[in-house]
Image 1 (cartoon, rainbow, N blue to C red):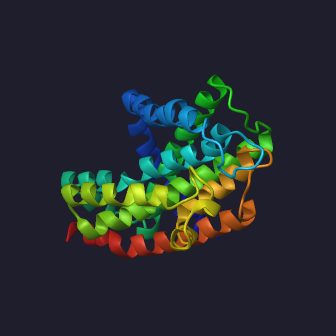
Image 2: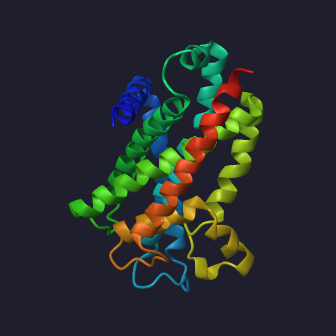
Length: 259
C-alpha cells in the first residue's frame, strides 16, 4: 500500500507543476473557449435546422453538446506530447528521468495534469451551454459523472499523445501527425451524428475509437433521454482499460525521448 501511495504522491507533485503553467497563462484559457463556442453557436445553430437526423426527442444542439465537449477534450489533449518534446529540448526530461520517480509516475502525472485541463474545457462548455440555453442535465450526480469522464478522457488522449511524442521525437513531425489524427478521430465517432447514419465500415472504425465511448458516456450523463449504445459504466470501463494500456506503453517508451 505504501508503494502505491508513494506512486500517487510523486505523480501529483509533478502534476501540480504542470497546473501552475496553465494558470500562469490566462490567454491559453481564453483560446480554449473559442473553438467550442464556434461549434455550438455557429455549426450547431445551422445544423439544428436540418430535419431527418435520427436523434430522438432531443434538440440537435443538446445532442451535439456532449460531442463538442469530447472534441474539446481530444483537441486539447492530443497536442500534449509537443510540450513533452519541448521539455526534452530544454533538458527537463533528463532531470526527471534521473529522479527517483518511477517511469509510470512520470507518465501518470502528465495524464493527471491533462485531466485537470479537461476540467477547464468542461467549465467552458457548461458556461456556453447555459448562456445559449441548451437544455442539459444539471443535477449534481450527472455533473460529477461528466467531470469524471472528462478527466479520464483527457488523461487517455494525453497519454496517447505522449506515446506519439516518444515515437516521432520532433515537434515538426508531431504537429503533422497530430493534425492527421485529430479530425479522423473526431469524425469517426458519434460526436456530431449518431452511429446509425454511418456506413458499416465507419461504424466498425467507430467501435474501436475511444472518443466514441467518451461521447456515449457524456451523452447519457448530460442529456435527459439521450441515445446511448452502452451504459455509462461500460463506456467508463472501456476508457479505463485503454488508459491503463496507454500508460504501460508510454512508460516503456518514455526513456527513448532522450535517445
